Length: 257
Ligand code: ATP
Image 1 (cartoon, helix red, strand yellow):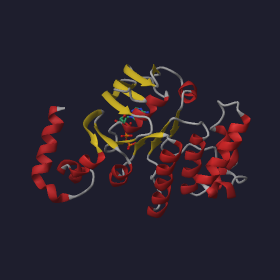
Image 2: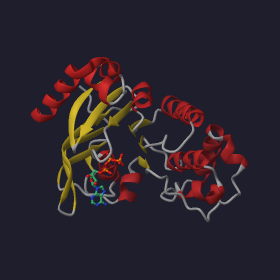
Image 3: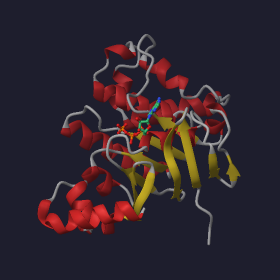
Image 4: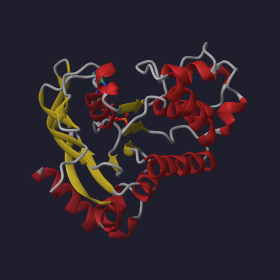
C-alpha cells in the first residue's frame, strides 16, 4: 500500500495548559480532497496550525512526503509544499494585490516560474488581474479570499490547507470559489485539507471526511457514507429525520470516544 502524502499521527497540541487536540490521526493522499468537520472550538483550526508549523505538537507526528515535519517552522513546512490559507485570510492591506500574491512566493528563486504562476493565479481569478495594482485593503471579502488562495498557490503547494474559505461570503461567491478550489485540485493535482463550518458544502466537495469533537476524531469515512449517517445528517446537515434516536446514538458515541 502506498503511503499517504500527509499523515497526522496521534497528534496532541496545547495552548499553554489547554489541550486543544487529543490524539488526532488524519491521512491525506496525493491529489485528494479531505475535509474536517466540527462545531466551534472542536479544534479544526488547531489541526491546520499544527500541520503548517504555526504550533508545535506536544506529542505525535506530522509526516509529509515521508518526513516528519512536526517541529519545523512554517517557512520550512512551506518549502516542502504545504501552503496554508488561514481563517480570516491574513492579507497585507497596505500592499497591492500583486505584492500580496508575490509574498506567497517568498521562498522561491525561480523568477520565470514565479511569473508563470502569477499568470496561473490570474487565470483562476481574473478579478485579481483587474485589481492587481490596487491596495488589498480595498478588496471585497470574496476578492480577499481569492487573493489568499492565490497567494498560497504562489508557493507551488502539493497540499493546500484551507480554513473556512466560505466564511462571510454570499452563497453565489461561495459556489464560485468552491468551483475554483475543485479546478485547482483537479488541474494542478494539489491535495486539499479543508476545514469548513458549512458541512453540506464540505461533504459535497471532499472525497473523505473526518468529524472532530472536542479535540478528538469521532468519525472518519468517505463523504458519501458520512452524508448518509443519521447522526451526521442531524447534527451537521440540520436534517431532523433522525429524530431523538439519532441524537441518543450520537451522545452514546461521544461517551465511548
Ligand atoms: P472555530 O470554528 O470556532 O474556529 P475550531 O474548531 O477551529 O473552532 P480551534 O480554534 O482550533 O477550534 O480551538 C480549539 C480549542 O482551543 C478551543 O477550546 C479554543 O477555545 C482553544 N483555543 C484556540 N486558540 C486558542 C488560543 N490562542 N489560546 C488558548 N486557547 C485557544
